Length: 202
Image (cartoon, rainbow, N blue to C red; front, side, top):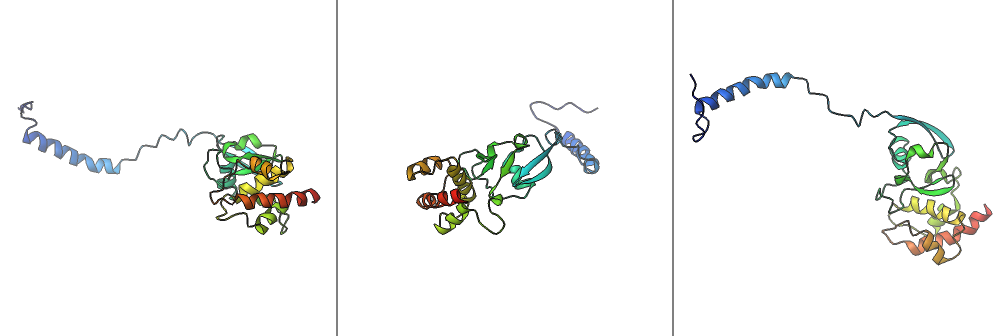
């Protein structure tokens, strides 16, 4: 009859060999066992059918209700002009228009813009004709790396429509939510001032 292990001496050699043999015998069974399905309660969350009007066109999508407008644009509709910068509403790179007003797409749920008109940087130009603000940014070289430029342009268009492009100081104030790490701010102000009267005539 096997003796119980002495707590002061630890397990016996026989106990170790017996236990190891048992574990080895179980390995084939474990290898052939079907893995347990992962606990994907989050993945199993029901998707929500939505109709998003982007740049004048309706898009039928089925999204997790928590999907942001930015992720819907970039990951589901392949409209990657709106950039993901900080993803916390601090940099302005994701700025788009909803019913003509600028919003931060990273802080806006896609579900909340159903029935509203969303305009992204891809929707500003008329065919091959650039929007006056886009043309002004090019003419004044108001960008360097270009990552923030779509958000800058969308915010600049809204700045003009809101009636804030009346002076350099006002433009700086109402464009302050859009950060440019390349520090192209003087040229951005010049582009907004140049485009404002052209937009009024358009």
